[in-house]
Image (cartoon, rainbow, N blue to C red; front, top):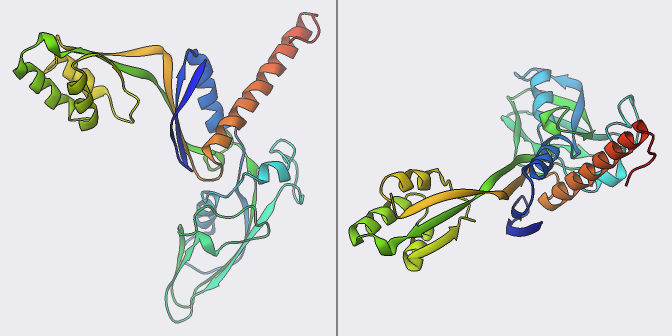
Length: 283
């Protein structure tokens, strides 16, 4: 297996994965969305709320605020360990909010939440939560814990985890008229002028589309303006894997956690199969 990093930012990573089975890449994708744990608000205790928003709506909004979770993975117990816990220091972090509007309206933002743990804070401080009219007040305690996306979407570490087959453009502009080539190039420019420019310069050969573009237009071009001079195929042994984080965890940590979980599940399966066949522990 060969892995190449195509793009890496604090919240997004794109990888080219070659010589890997689809089942493996898809398993990693599913684990990223459903199994990688992050912190999120799970319970809210309201002391006062005379705003126009119901308690349930505010609680739902608080649950969807991404919380920094990288250090929390080592500090707090797993969701399975805290399943029956009601008041454990090793399971929960409290975030407090107490704001009142006096003479002027006030917009309450995620940055107004005060956490008892500096390692668990709102990732973004500019998410609007509540509108307070003059004379209104909201006072609450929100309790956050580790959870997994399969339990609720608010515990999904990633907003996007997707893979696609590697698109490859095969073309030969040398066997077509100038008018046909120009018409084809014009069609390709609809998706990416940079790719069209590279194909014009190459004139003939294969081009792996590693850019983050929609290649469905190229399929259309291959059947219309580029007919007989260009075709696009999708390699079934190579994939582009895209991961976008909510900000709770860096994309690299999300990927490594998903791989660790996959390894643990695979080992448990092998041990169970070995025990059921009387073969003892498998390796």
